[in-house]
Image (cartoon, rainbow, N blue to C red; front, side, top):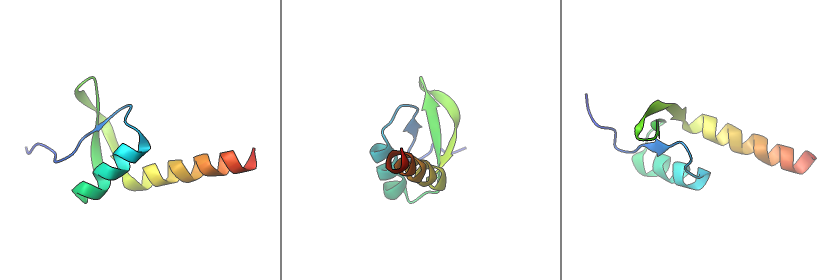
Length: 60
């Protein structure tokens, strides 16, 4: 096994996470909670979540 180049922490901001995606040039990043593996997040999941938040802000 190889240590991942970048990891995401559960409460990282969207800006931080997107910067990590851009710098690592990866599509998946592991998510850590309290220093332990919590799951994976994809760049497309992040972008979709952002689009949904924008839509909800515009149409409310």
